[in-house]
Amino acid sequence: MKNLCLFFLVLAISGCASAPRHAFVEPDFSETDMESQYDKVLARLTELEATQPNAAAAKNLVITAQATWNKFRTVDCRAEAALSYGAYSELLYIGCMKEHSDKRRDSLESYYNSINPEQ
Figure 1 (tube, rainbow, N blue to C red):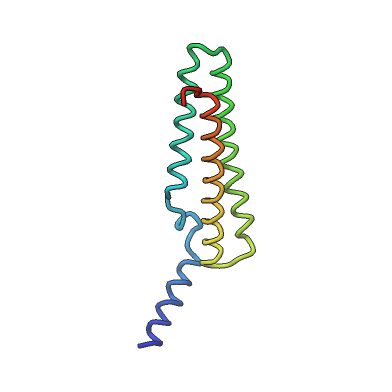
Figure 2 (cartoon, rainbow, N blue to C red; figure 1 turned 90 degrees about the horizontal axis):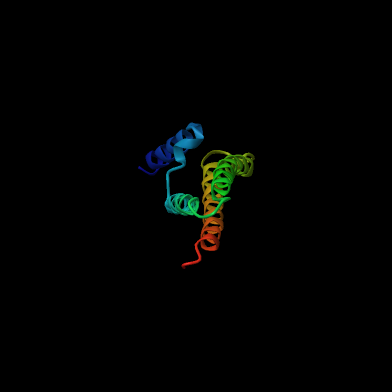
């Protein structure tokens, strides 16, 4: 029985190692929170367009920054996990993605607070 369990464990790990990278990245609270904060920033900038002449330009810059940040995060996390193999590589990748999402959420929250003085 012990050998059978070991066999299935090895089989599962082997399958994990050959699965596509994105198969293990599931949305988590960090990603959802970060996207929610991003949406709040865009909504606030949209509101400010009526009264602030540079709000539309700022909104476009935030959109560009977010797209650039997404690319950076993916490449940075791939680099961090590149020298590892199998399930450990996936854990490093997912952990890196979460860490970046948490930092970006905090950054967006800080920006939101700076453009939303009512809080």
